[in-house]
Picture 1 (cartoon, rainbow, N blue to C red):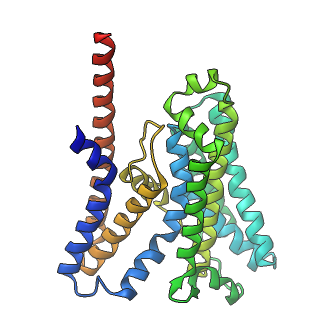
Picture 2: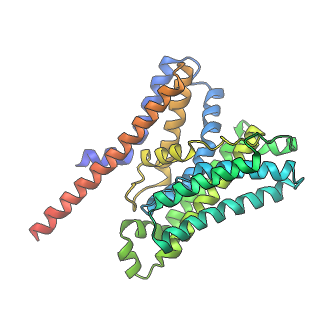
Picture 3: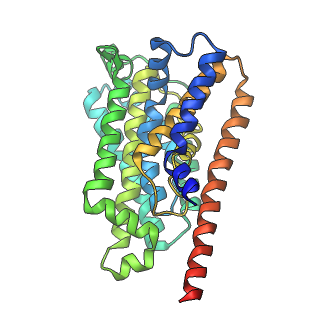
Length: 322
């Protein structure tokens, strides 16, 4: 039991270390400063979106609309700057407000109508993706001011700005979970929704807030991604929700709710980044990468389920002996 608890707390960091050692041995180009900065920049957008996914999973929910929201923000912001001749700051504000509103609507439907989160967010995913195609006509949107690219392509010293944005967002996420009563509410609702409601927590409002935050962080990720690519693409957020979910579950966030930490999610994100980068250096195909990432997700979820089943058995034994 002690070994299992130790592995649950620190195993993710051991896995990350082993991956770094493996790719360092198999590729001379992996453990160099330039490549490590590339990995950090590549995972920065995922890290931003994963904070929102962490909050949702803590409630015992799921948000499959993250990728489509990233795409819509990408397209809407680009369209407003190019076709609407809008100031970049105003365009960013409108797009992020839109993404937050979409998340809030998800929370509203889930909390009030009590539809399963997986169905609501899947429906939102399809609707939002369709809207992105309608607005763009399926074509990339480009031609906005080059100064906009600083957010996604610039550096402060040797550190890419997207990495700095990710660190700030993650620190905000950790602060919310560890130092605010909202964070305690997230854990309480995810641990036992009925008990949380009876203790005076407004569960409905908590769900509003969490899904709105998920939309907000996905919107920020979409803005940074647009700045990095300098072109609004209808496939820009494709698969984002899968990678964010994998990073969170791999980082120990329980799919059943009530347990998880931002610090471990960081390790999960870095594992995905190291895996993707290392496999590219080893010339692994995109399909091989899909198989490995899918296997990683299955393993992480299986481990979470095993932990839950073990706790349930221990609780039953304890209650039977009382």
